[in-house]
Length: 403
Image (tube, rainbow, N blue to C red; front, side, top):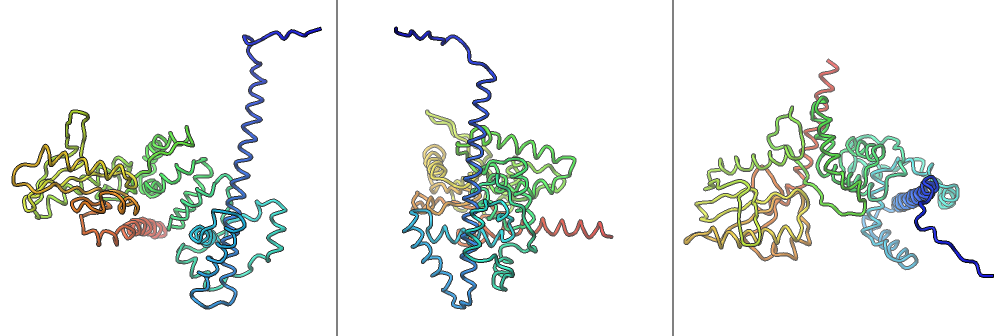
């Protein structure tokens, strides 16, 4: 006898049943993700540990470490495939040197611990060389760092770039406790969130936190979406008691630059801010426009709140052509364009019109516009000055409290 199946498409599934299924899948996926995170971070840290240990086995030759990295890269690539280039292994080495006291062993499964013990007993004491290497990365004394399994390798890659040990630890703990996506962490580091928050009066800090959550909301909604990185914000004449939001800092940068160029006495005349250019297809706004009557040309300044991209270069190139077409008059020289940004992508600078267009270059915003050669030396220096200013202010506060 043939059985006839009755369709029940119109019947809604039990709500509890669906919720249970979702909970099972969600929990399993989260556990798998965290397990994979743990293994990746642990593997990278342990590889760095083993490389550093190998370098300290009585070898004094300066090139010994280089050969270790290259030989290890060749061997690992041959056996395990891509992902073990010399550059990657050096990054693992740096990971260990930046976080030598990361309590990662305790979080590992017993099988992993057995493998480590078979390789070699954990180092009891570090050599002077390792201590010197660590002091270059972090100026503060080492402390035992808790291991947060919810932080991915991409989190640690961002944390390694924070030179200030106190700030790095703060970012690390906040990322774990607040469950920051790695893009949120990267953005907050780039926007100097820690320093802005610490230098804002406690009564006003909630507004800074609120702004950060608003600007990073998209990261939490869609973790697979790539969203632009912010500028590395600097203090440029901002009132120390002010609320240090990113928009405040951006305005401070433009205000300071506008004032400085006008006071330089080198032929700059202010034309406009957010200068409007209308075409048949669209409307465009340029952050700052000057006319230099010595050079006899317009100078366009575009502030980017992130690392420079090919699109930024193309946009400035378009601005130059628009100004030459619609604004330049007879007797004017070609318009000059300057892109002010937090960082300059070397490939973008090399393979775009930046490499061939002599009247356009990417510059990191400073209190003045130096030559490109001077600019290159100042990029990292300015970040260090900013951090040192913060550290000195904290030190002064502690001295006053003791008195």
